[in-house]
Length: 412
Image 1 (spheres, rainbow, N blue to C red):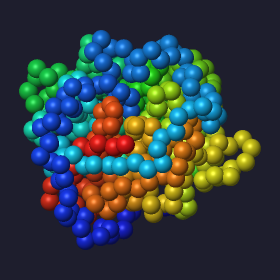
Image 2 (image 1 turned 60 degrees about the horizontal axis):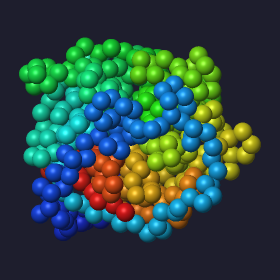
Image 3 (image 1 turned 60 degrees about the vertical axis):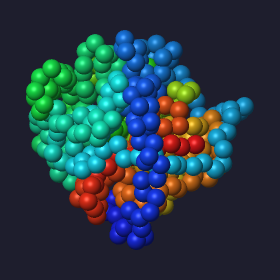
Image 4 (image 1 turned 180 degrees about the vertical axis):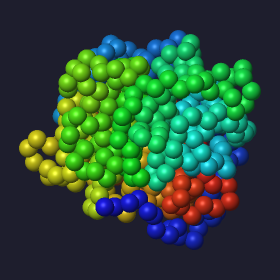
């Protein structure tokens, strides 16, 4: 069994010269965050005012995303450039404790969850001020469990609902809470309304990423908790990608009409993102040899535990890209500028996977290797802008003064 324990800090210059390059443009960058609002924030589950599902003009509610149904290489699709670039434009926030889930708010501020404290805080992106808004009742942190993914309701402008995936004493579950900004700080979360319960829990492999897709449905990546048989057990919610209505019900287009299971054969899914053609991508922990980036189709079997990496044969779907486990241990992903951007924990780097349709356009590139330590979450802000969340205070890092951080990036 491979745990995501990281080695020592790579290189003596992790926080050396150039760490805050272009930080003189901080105010300009943060103003851009506010203007970005929720546009293109598919992976965070945000929506524009009025409550339209992310990816406006997408599939009708209740239908499976049409572009996810196929996995051809996309003949005629334009390819992302073979070489890209990453510029750290500034530090949006620092001093965060075990950050995991991030949900951008209309106007540019962020909701950030603490895995180990079970709290959600609001981060002002113009000042970096961090204000707790409340604690999620029932969170029982331990190992890789705790308060994990966050997402905003597609109708957040009117219903003010925040969704959270978290570990309890008995299971992993998804609940939603009303966010009332008029109440005092620390008391702004309403009582949780459980949307889905019974996702297996463990000290490892709890999955945890949630996001609203372009069809307005809620997706969740889960893990098999170290019990490999769960990944192929269609009755279990472990080792799966789940698709459900905002109320936690199965939806039309799922492989089985009475089940929220969308794909299976997964070991530990921690990243979900959609490209402009509404195809769903997911990052996944391997065991000893290969970590994976997968293109997800409804009813797809991604092979675990029979297969790790490519070459699974008939009945299994191969990953689009793979990495040695020391180079990745992938967590959050986002789409921007023709590529998937993938945060690596043990690998301590940001991977760029340039795409042409559903295939790699060129070999993946690594950026920021060893510079900021373990990397957990990537948030798209539209265009060439991303946010990157570090993960040095999760018990497996080597935190330095100011960790953990949210960094602003421009990419191409």
